[in-house]
Length: 138
Image 1 (cartoon, rainbow, N blue to C red):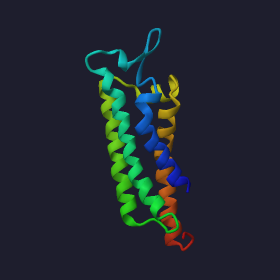
Image 2 (cartoon, rainbow, N blue to C red; image 1 turned 90 degrees about the horizontal axis):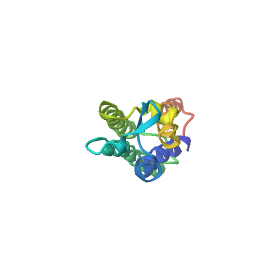
Image 3 (cartoon, one colour; image 1 turned 180 degrees about the vertical axis):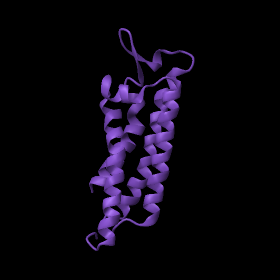
Image 4 (spheres, rainbow, N blue to C red; image 1 turned 45 degrees about the vertical axis):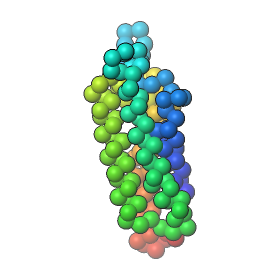
């Protein structure tokens, strides 16, 4: 259930980030400089965080099979979402946003939660697979 909850958390961050966050930032001389202040290109950087909404797909798969152990395609879908999210964060970094600075320096609790949830959810999925192989899982 913790794995599904983390997937839902990341999906909600993707859906709600533009509405509930001040957006991505860079360190500036007088404090954080938010990318939305750039009129030409920086305003859409926060939209790259919306890729986290893709985690709603593996969340739906896990919730549909909550009473059963994970199957191979769940891991594949999770891996695709992970690659998309990481690529999106790299693209944001290339333009304006300093991801780690925004999450933990500004701080931005939504982005921080999603960044922490990425490796933890991957670890929980691996644990579910190993438990299933050893007969401990459902």
